[in-house]
Image (tube, rainbow, N blue to C red; front, side, top):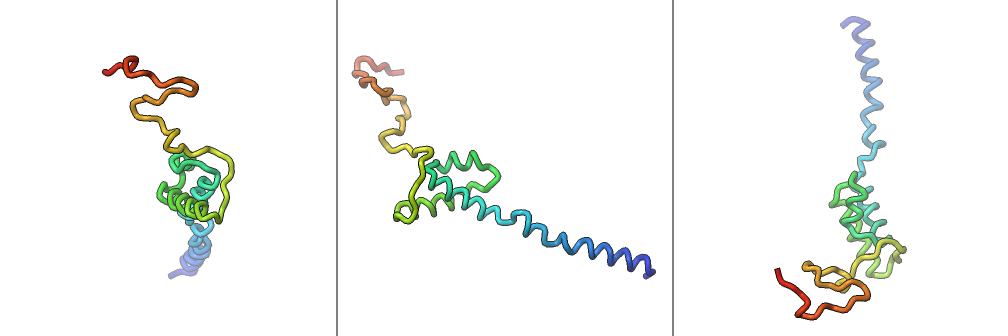
Length: 116
């Protein structure tokens, strides 16, 4: 091997070695970042589905893992929640057939309802 080839090989290795650890700097912990995002979403009262839509760079499973961890902490009283998107309760969840009256309306009587 000539001196020039040996110098070129050494230079190539010297340039490549610092790049070997780049993924450690670039965010190989996307799973942990997703869990942190899910945790923050739960503390701010966001639904996990909304959180996943808003943060599509993270895996939905990592967001859900963080959301569930925060939900456990909230239920145990370790963490308080912040105002944000409220989660619907069973009374607020609309019925599939659209049978729930709008706010301030009286429910329709059986003769007013039509069947399709």
